Amino acid sequence: MSDALNYLIKTRPETVSHYFAFLKETGKHLDPKTRNLISVITKVYSQTDRGFRQYLGRALREGCTPMEVLDALLMAFPALGLAKITWAVDIILDMDIPGFAPDVITQSAPEPARWRDVMASKDAADGEVTRTECEGRGLFIYRNKRIFEVFDSRCPHQSTDIPELALNGETLICPKHQWEFNAHTGACIKKGNSPLKRIESKVVKGRLLAFW
Image (tube, rainbow, N blue to C red):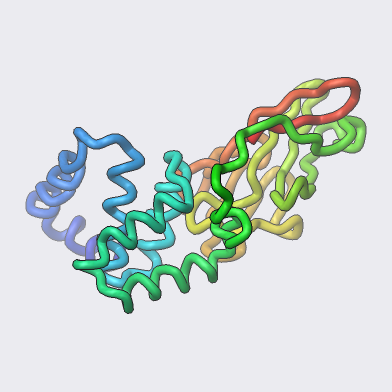
């Protein structure tokens, strides 16, 4: 939220509260995926870099595929024009989101979710958080005896890949905008309001598997 909006909330709460009530009501009959795709388009129209990154992340978390995002941008061509669409694509490329890689997005059909072999379960120390890579995806793994929690390493804010150096005890701090997360639960504990994406996991014959 901007400093100006924060100022108006403090000085004229009786007026600005109507604005937020209006925003809350709009789109309530749309599914979350559609609502966030529309928000993505509005941020491209106004060329709001920070807002575009934020709502793109939300749309992807709500189940939008990269190809659906590109379709939405191209369908809005009459309103956006080519310059704004390429502005948005430049930001997508800068975010380096794996699903938008040309060799992935042009596949005739997306790869179905499946169980993937991450690591030997014994390699994750009990009571500690481990960062690893599996098939091009960064993961943070917290082990509590026989219970494993697996989280996507990308920050839910703008999909920044959080490195191992960002881990301080049980706290992860995204280096881009300093969102903080509890690495044991995935909960966002400072600045932001969205948790790390939890990935389903299980241990089979001494191997930690994750499903995506």
